[in-house]
Image 1 (cartoon, rainbow, N blue to C red):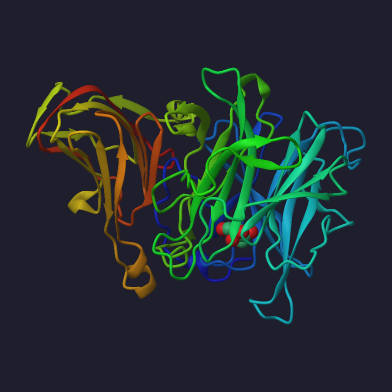
Image 2 (image 1 turned 120 degrees about the vertical axis):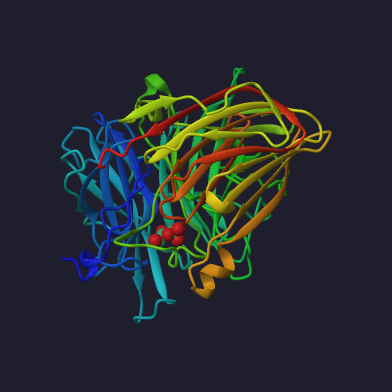
Amino acid sequence: MMTGIDAAPRLRCPALHFTPPQGWMNDPNGLVYFEGEYHLFYQYHPHDRVWGPMHWGHAVSCDLCRWEHLPPALVPDADGMCFSGSAIVDRDDTSGLFGGEPGLLAFYTVHRETAGDPGDYVQEPCLAYSRDRGRSWQKYPGNPILPNPGLRDFRDPKVVWHAPSRRWVMALACGQVIRFYVAENLLDWRLASEFGEGQGAHTEGPWECPDLFELPVEGRQATRWVLLVGVGAGEQESFGSFTQYFVGHFGGERFHNENPAETVLMMDEGRDFYAVQTWSDVPDGDGRRLAIAWLNNWLYANQIPEAGWRGTLSFPRELSLEETGEGIRLRQALAAELGTAGGLSPSRMANSTDALMAGDNVLIEQGPSAAHGRLSLQMAPGTTLEFDLQQAGQMLLRITHDGSALRLEHRREGRNGDPDFDRHFPHHLTGQRMAKTDIELEWLVDRGSLELLVDGGRYAATHLGITDPFHQPVTVRLVAGSARLTEGRYQGVIDPLE
Ligand code: FRU
């Protein structure tokens, strides 16, 4: 039952980015592919537009673009709220819950406040199962499947199959480390190891929402394991919550980081790319590792402008690994399904001549609802290019070729009168450099967000924007120097609801 929020004016939804039907959403949960459908669950509070008693919202899609909303899969009860977790296909009925047939298992976190004090709680991994393609869910009577051993943070189970040891592995966020548990039968879990102390980035906040997967290294007969970790916002942190990743080896018990312990690898350099999870059980035939993130930051998530709903997810991204001079690194691409999104209208850049001089604008047509574009440029030394994504410089990316490398700078404006929001939302990030002078930019602008991939997805920056309507013309302006445009493509996306 809705309480008051039905009456709220509806903010126009993004055309291509998933949003809840109403209320509040945070992390994506339980991403799993089963019988032709991508399932997407998410942290959901349907009765208000701020974080609250967590449900698992649910939607399915066949093409990662159009989502059908289904009723919440898990709802809070006397045992507690349903915090984040993962899902898998139990293909061989290892759990014994499916009478010999394949079925869906969801591993969620029960979060129970003790003595009614929000700061005083117990968290425990629990199991739910569905025998009808995810349409209804039962909580397992033997919950919790992993009793809390006395840790304050004990949440966000990510369960994966480790083929060489023929065992299931659960990565679990425990304070500022990730613990790995293993099980043969998906029900009886044993602690195998712990990873994180002295590794990568730590803030005052907890590590959250781990993911673990293996990927081939492009062009080599080798694979590596990737461990994704959400780094929670500390009170003092100006950057807030962000996603880091580790690359290394995993033999079924222990994760070995192959980079120096102090190396911090950011999955996305923007402010709004958190709680990243990847789909389980995507058919082997295409061997894809598809990821999606909550586009937000706990520093201001509860204060961003809203009307009727609050919270959006990234467009799904396909991940790969490649060898670089600094080691093996993640590379990201917008899932190819974007090209098949309904209502695409390919069009030309307003100025697609190849030689650009200082003062030239490449004005890109405005998309009806969302816009996906690509630009490839070769920049002469001393060239500065501004990529203006909203009118009046609300969101600006500046790329400067300083003679030896490219320097990226991004700036975002936006205030809404709430002191917390106004303190944290506007930003100016600088300092990223890439040892290249030719550059590929790809962007997806939708109502409320910008996803930007630079250099063929080797660098990503994702930001929320609060201008409404958001879809203003994108302007690329050469401020100084000269550049050669080697590719320019653009397509507008028509919102199927309009
Ligand atoms: C991450 C997180 C998770 C937790 C969930 C609660 O954003 O804090 O660790 O399970 O959100 O909604």
